[in-house]
Image (spheres, rainbow, N blue to C red):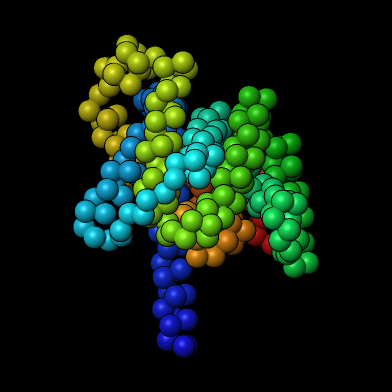
Length: 287
């Protein structure tokens, strides 16, 4: 019994470490792609979806997991929320400093608790509820002191938080409802999300010429984009795995440890401004 519990905890810790490093890495890679190559946002999201499915297909061929037939109508809303989750968070990253982008994501935890309390009648301890106070205060304070604050970035960040919260709640709910593991659910959901995104990309982004998916991209740009797809595969898989084995709230509480690293990286790599007040906001999210 004790040995089985230790083994389960060890797997959870391993999954969290994979998510920690891949999540931090994907933020910096995507920001690099936007700043240095100007690669279109939705197209980059589509690349991430396709590479995620290809990675899962390879895992399935290697007998790492067995696919389970799922009714499409059961995962349509999950697939749509996945599109919104990735697209809006990438747009937030594109239009905000890395510090503001990462701190805005902290609001996902309060929104998830609100959704689960209101619609799923789930209860949380007073200690968990009290942690929401410094998180919320830190995000508001950061927005006030962010010298690159802009309305468009705030809109994308807000939409990203709302859609991400729904997505993460549904990830856990669907795994339990359909009795599938993280790989089985993502295996069907990723291509469905790709199909949705493929239909709307021509409406918002050019297909050819400068800035189009079939434009004259340099080899370093293409390699970086493909590499970001591989990292996105690890991010998506680890999100599903952690939520399926713990909860959406646990995942987001763990995610607060990424703040200091991403803020420091944004300051060093992209010269994002970081005031003392914003640094204190990050500290508030760790209390």
